[in-house]
Image (cartoon, rainbow, N blue to C red; front, top):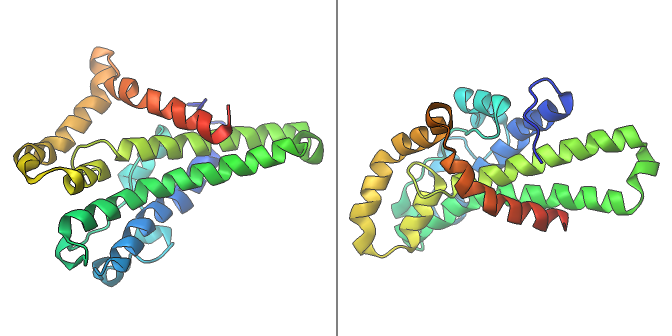
Length: 219
């Protein structure tokens, strides 16, 4: 499970890798999908790149380094340019980001499992393998949490856009309110454990996290 140590280099290193690669890949997935669906807005804004400077947000990056999740600069799109329609296109583009986090978690977990099955402890040494195991655990765990957190149905998260794409038009009024107040709801949920000792986000996310964690590691 994920360590919260702020001084362990094998905890900080995967967070830095996530900032330099996973965050840009998440946003690039949004941008490439939007471009593929016919909207050139991300291309014109210079978001079709892996350059971290084009994607990283200062406060979101600091929050990741201090905790277990953060955010990057959102990729802006014009839904009316999507050739499959604004609702379906928006949902597909939104889903691409969390899907990238899941893909990264799966690839890294499978690589670790392959090394372990071929005697990784003997191949690279027990200490090195232990450090690699910690790195893998942190990297996979954060990517899974990022995927699940982003799929929460509150604006401005990806989950709200996915929900709008699949929900009937009759839900628009309720979804408008969720989107309008979504940031305040999220901030309340994030700080609720510190104020009232109740971790609603943990209750909601931990079950799905355990499922995917065990799935990717074959536990």
